[in-house]
Length: 308
Image (cartoon, rainbow, N blue to C red; front, side, top):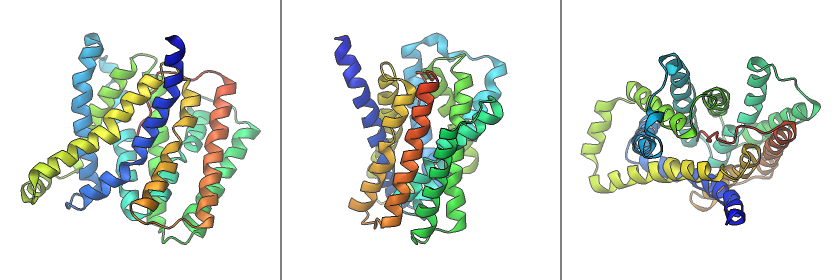
């Protein structure tokens, strides 16, 4: 029985990455109803927060209590990471091919390395600098040389998603020293949902729901967006982390940009040029190098959920 649990762990992580990789489908479909990127973020985060707040007391009622001194920490996780990176990522999806947006998101290990050096005083290594060089070269190929019409604004927005994504790992590492993964996830999404209401234009959202030709279809799409791109992958990822080290899970989860690329090609008929493919390979190589480095340097927190 124990062996079967160990065998299914990696599969759950890979499935989580696959679900995250399908995010572009839902973002673009909701966009067709007239919702802005920020409004789509609010829909996804709010519904996911509701689910996790229902799940949390089922797992541990005492986990609902957090110390007042940790409120700024969760504000940073919710506003500075989840809300910021998701808005950037969803905006990037509407400005560029899915593969490019996903790859720019996955520059996050580079930002994690830099922030770890700054805040945790981690010493850089030759391997880390090699990974950084590969990631930068990959970004240049994917966003510049590929000639896919990527603007400077689009590039900055895409990189912003990677920075916000990386910030979650820094703040999440601190939060997981004090709270369970379920508590960290629930409060992060709850604060992010509250923050999204300040910028999404609630009145405009309500009018768009009212003007929808088929409200039932729209509500179903919203529910599926939260379920497929947040609830299910977060649960799969958390369950997988019971038997899979976080460093190894990070490598397995890199199927997300590959799935996003395939979705872009198959669903939206987006082209994949040779420079873009090479850039993708270089950035994924950088991610693998950084994760392998993390595994050899020591065990990471095995309860850290991925922030997608």
